[in-house]
Image 1: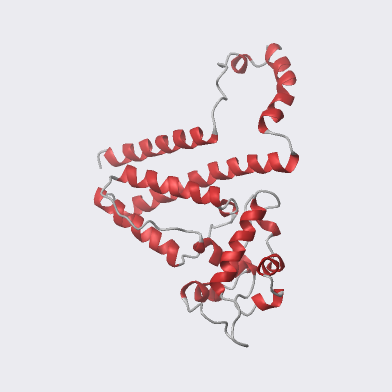
Image 2: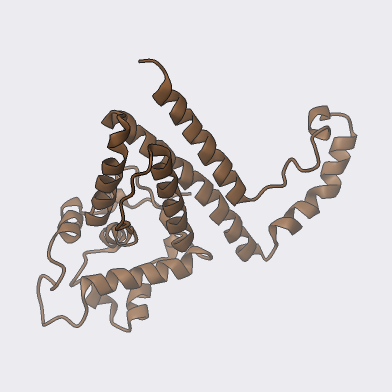
Length: 250
């Protein structure tokens, strides 16, 4: 389940905060905080909540408590939670310094693994509804770098953007499933292995009933793979599909 946030934000203020001067609040006494410090604290709180309560539990009060300040002091720097979330999304994006001379597949593979690590480090990130994203400095810098590395492959920009988008959505989906499984274990105290063991007697009876002959004939290791293995299998297959598209006659 994704967190809705975009409809309630002030788009103009979010853009101003993303791209403007963050050194002082708009009004009031000399600052004891900074916008960057608030954003960093919000990320820390969100990281702590992500594996248990989820991003829905992130509040201005929780961030203020983490910083040891009054809640109202945060509003001198940021108008609300929705705009703060826009800043958090851009804050956690890391853009590599080095540029290699790899082909498009290597570039996209590195990008996919980097995004996977981001989702694992900040488990709230893939649950934010970014169907209408705001591009901040880090996000735009990362996209600029990605296009710079991919354009020598001779693929037109529109196709490149669709490849980038398809890969991003793929990583998003696998990351959400993996994080949801971890959340379920922590929420219930029942491991994934225990969960399936509880179903085993019922499923064995179903397989022995003869009603599901195809399922009953599956090999024993059919479901024996990790999310990491699923991620790599899907990524390779996705890139094989890109390669078929690139190589087909125009």
